[in-house]
Image 1 (cartoon, rainbow, N blue to C red):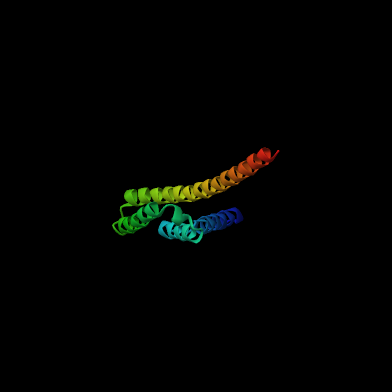
Image 2 (image 1 turned 120 degrees about the vertical axis):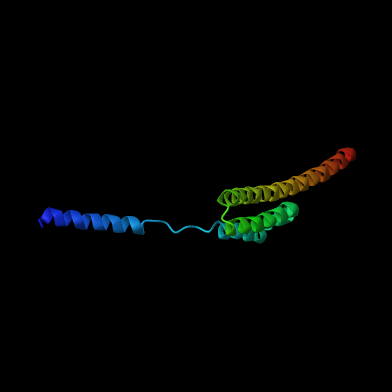
Amino acid sequence: MSKTAINLIIGTILLFASSVQAKKPKVDDILVVQKLISHAYEHGYVDSAPIEMSAVEKKVILAKEAKKKRNKKLFNKLIREIKSDLKIIKKRSEVNKLNSQLSSIQNKNLENQQILDELKEQL
């Protein structure tokens, strides 16, 4: 064999080996979703949306069943819904915190207005 033929064979083998190693390991969507759920519990997002969280947990059970039955279409749909629901839960928690801050500021403004009215009466 000539040198170029040997180099071509070695190059092909190396290219094939690198393409085999380059494949990414498959991510388990159930584990990803469960991690997102635990994150929601850790940060207290669940307190703002307990009903939605209950629905998310039911969807996780359905997703596990769909995965066992190899129903990819239903499984992928449920995973997308769960991720969307968790985003909604997080946003609802953020809105509740902002509403609480707004209420506190409004109460302070009301107190300040009363003090100002009293001071005006004294003048």
